[in-house]
Length: 332
Image 1 (spheres, rainbow, N blue to C red):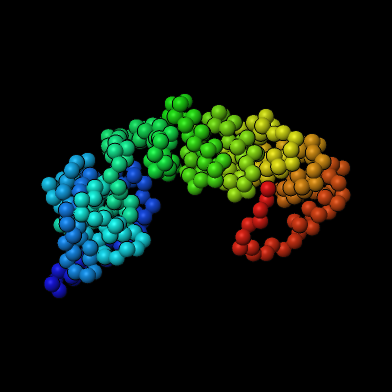
Image 2: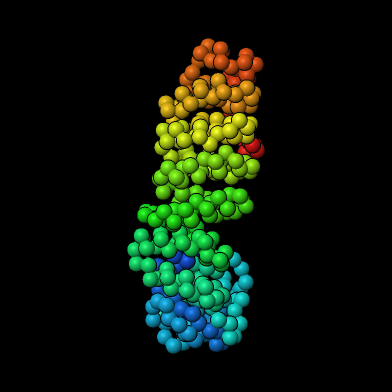
């Protein structure tokens, strides 16, 4: 028994680094990296000690690997983060992503390695396993953004952001833009990966979808996220397309000024100076003036275009010593 426990302890220690990295695993990553993918039914619990939980499974359908007609899966005992077997009972059916460590199978990706059996999920996993290159994977994931099962659609959004290239048809690009708009509107966590995918599409149609989305969102956190993404686009394209979507409202003008302030100074300076002649809003004028001063413009060159109180306040704020803030202010 001591030899058995010692072997189990060594297996766990070697597994810890990989286990920590697998907690946010997408279904695509699990399909590619797991040694075994099956649908299976729980037959019995055969715990070898109080420290370990082991379940015996019957193989129902092999999707990847060679698990055998029956097999055991082992993980540390206890109901806590990253554990998955404790919630299973005899006769439960599930989809398993497993990794071999020695002669033993372990759940791959912690809790992501043991999923409830759902026909839609099984079909999606089969499609992921059949997609044999990044192009096919990208097309499948883009289509899956419109899947009726939220779990599959959200996972597809996360996986899309990890692919090295996105060569997609017009309908698939449109699916990414639509999913991003819905995610921003509802404040979903998939906004970030969908924005990453959208930025990497690098086309004018996507830019024309992102700009009004950014200018119109009411949430400051979503606006900040979108601004960071737009700042990664070609500055000239952003500056060229921005006026087409800008209306005479304070929020939109302020968001436009903040975006221009995040672009490289050379291309953005002309656009910022143009804003001085199109708005009387003090907040917008202050943002534009601060940005121009920070980029090297002199106060003297701005005094004819900026009200004196705004110019003085901008200089004071620029010269004020920076202090540490643990939380960002809500800039709407």
